Length: 372
Ligand SMILES: NC(=O)c1ccc[n+]([C@@H]2O[C@H](COP(=O)([O-])OP(=O)(O)OC[C@H]3O[C@@H](n4cnc5c(N)ncnc54)[C@H](O)[C@@H]3O)[C@@H](O)[C@H]2O)c1
Ligand SMILES: [Zn+2]
Image (cartoon, rainbow, N blue to C red; front, side):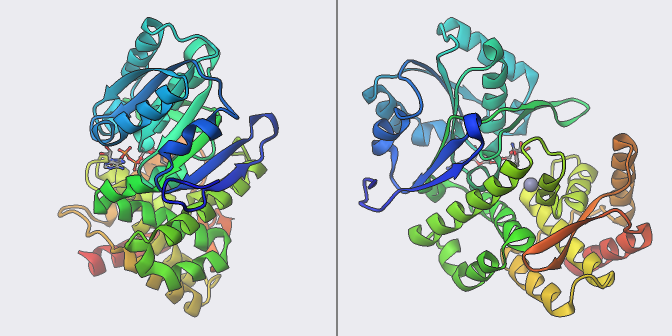
């Protein structure tokens, strides 16, 4: 199938049986919406959820394409930012859905980053015990990560993503042109999760990133499509093996143990998620090298590509002790030992539960002395 620009649209399948779905990826694909969506969803009432940054940019185009294909659209625009991923906003969406007469055959669409996707997906999973849901991710992070795999959630005042479900969309529609307006800092934060896939499971993808990095940063459409399709494919592979996060899916948390601790220690107000994960991955590489499970040459290769994203300096006043405190608090809450996903070579990771606190302290000290 061709897009407006005459390029081929790519399709990645998430083969989950009855809950399986296609991910369409291409540039300027809104006009091709009718012919593809109608294979999967029926025209009818739609609640289109977006945020105040994304809706003015792409809302009109998406609504036109939907209306042309026979959908009746009610848009709801939420404030941008993590604060909207709340039960209060979920309730607002239910109210809009009820007022617009949405029933169990209607559709909820998320147009935006991971915040919109997680919130709208949570509303779709729970409204009338679940109605069809479509993801139109517009941030790099949402295109390579949060829109794939079916985790939907809102935050609770006591913690992030604590109220949620596993709920797969009917389809995912990745419009590459949306990345042209994404702030550079957000793009780079998403790039951290991109490199993550290479390190955890695919050496040849990692090597593709090494040789196409400039073109990727320049958003060359061919490279972008290749990279995003590869990430979706890799994530789909993990999700199909372990849909409800009983085992393998944990490898996606590479860099996230210390990344989350950095985010928590700064009350989620300093780092973007991907920035914290990037620092977390670099520290996990240090730990792996120290434990002699990763060769120095492989560690250097990981560091070289990760560093090309640009490591964010820690904020003034943050140090090893506060991050260690966040880690200990997390461990206490989860009632288990600290779990680290560590690389054994580029393209392969394993789960480790025996990383000692002194070593963690050492790599944190290094992070604070070398990047501040
Ligand atoms: N469900 C999952 O599996 C999963 C995985 C990873 C992260 N998440 C969640 O995703 C969220 C983070 O997602 P995010 O990084 O996309 O954040 P986000 O949704 O807040 O988007 C980042 C910023 O970019 C703006 N934006 C998005 N697309 C744009 C575009 N094309 N042009 C201009 N501006 C644009 C948004 O308005 C926002 O200000 C977190 O809540 C996290 O918990 C979920
Ligand atoms: Zn992440």
